[in-house]
Length: 172
Image (cartoon, rainbow, N blue to C red; front, side):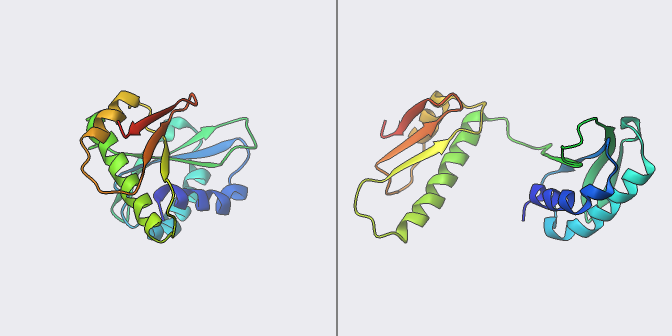
């Protein structure tokens, strides 16, 4: 279970206990340790925070199960929105865009290729990937694909951009 899915479950469990007009914002540092065991103590802390804190000036940090977590309460007029919001931050994230795009492509190709092995399909196989890594454009993916040395069954690999453009990155 990922940290954000734990937060979604917490939101569902405590939303009615958080007064209208308030939200709790949480920042967790990656990697999140013991995400599934974090649910109970984090839920308890969120309910404490919402009862004792009134504004963004009351932001504070706490460590729970080895995770550094920042909390604050914000005012809102939107009554339909989530009551618990979260973000996972990575202070040691890679800034090498090409390396990150290569990692994403390799991961998806390996995972999807493994799924293909269980299918008894003899025809052409295309892999279409949505580009959620917005800092990498199609040229970066082409360069990343050119540097990948993986055996796979895909006859074509496509990148689908947010603006609905579809670009072939394999074969080149």
